[in-house]
Image (cartoon, rainbow, N blue to C red; front, side, top):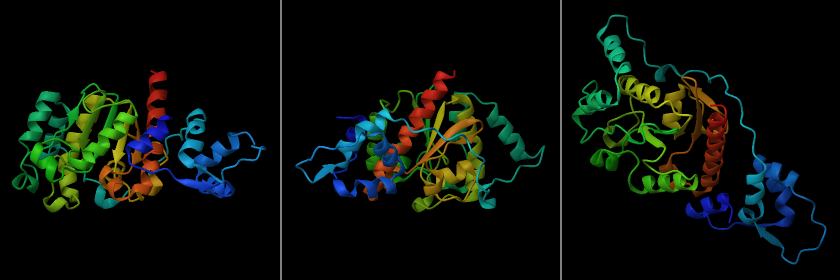
Length: 289
């Protein structure tokens, strides 16, 4: 079984049967499949079956026909509400950000644990610094802790976390091994509401320093809010996918949040395409090192 088929099986996608006469239409609808179809030899012999499973028929060729990695593109128009205001030189906020930018891992961890810069400190149970290998080549960035994360002090736990672990496993990765997982916010917004711009502004220096210390070869951003916050854009996630972006000179690949995938099974295959793109970006970065 191919890696793609294994991934779809792990994510719970049943075998899809598509009549052979519909393969051309399917290929037109899915660019990746179109490339695969063009690479497949013509089948002249009659076939008894009238349908073939998509995963079985198309998965293996996908792995042998690598999709080209799009070059980094200019950022989409910036959303004013997502851009933290630059602190005045010499102000308390500027001094705070400069101090965070000079921290090593232990001091940064302690600073997050004791942070009271915004009102979220009043409602949190635990801060969620992040978890994983602090020399990792992969970094995953989500939005903010949810209820389970707030209780356990670790990002992506519960059902969404299990799905994320399965996604990592399909790439040969594992939580704590060559992956570091963090969030834009380190504290849970009450009721899991969207973070406020001021909350993002106060937490962004922590994430920026984590990225600077880690120096990952690729960042995978999970979900609409995290993508729009990190890239500072209002572009929908559907248009951010499939393109290699950059953050502080590091390649960024955008995909769906695991919690969204639990509700929308049809997008699990697209998430796998995103992870394949991230793997190719990582491998190319390693080859050029």
